[in-house]
Length: 253
Image 1 (tube, one colour):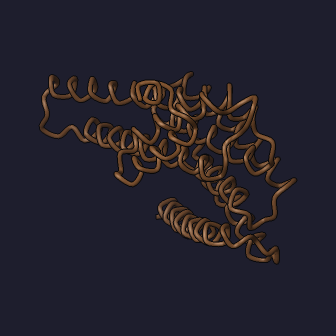
Image 2: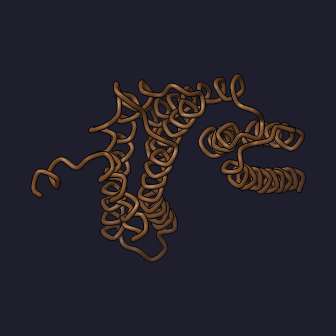
């Protein structure tokens, strides 16, 4: 039994990752999927679509908690009404701890992607998935870094999203969820990191229009995901359009 615990099989890692996800213990889901990848992937095989989903969901859930905490600390710093300088120092130190956690999580998945997952990818769908994931976590680093480090992380994210976009445009139909996800996440990157809302909105609008007119019949298991991402694209387009209208109005007041 000890050997099984020390060196779990791929099947055991996958099962326990599902159990941890069901229990909403996403750190443990992440750890089980990390074990699965290191033990089972490249050069002998690659992740299944289910395994990719579990890995991605776990990292997203874990990093989202930290990103939310970081934004709250930044807001507390910037709206420092009534707090003493000592209070501000404590908040800044706490934010720095959160930043260290975010960096550790992002560095972990980026290493996994560069050393194992991307080299093992054989299909266009999996390659696009991994380069989106790479771009996302480089974007998360750009959110929290300052000056040169922010610029470096943003440049890396740009390269990853561009690679994902090139593969998706060449090999996947417009309404395929991975192609739509590239458009959505790349648009968010332009809007939030580069502060190029118009470029982001344009990318989202083009992707939505292409998918809307695409007559490709997707496999049933992809249809719901495709529809959900199209709705998110539409919601973001509406939000960005409203944001630009407010900015134009402010300019002319």
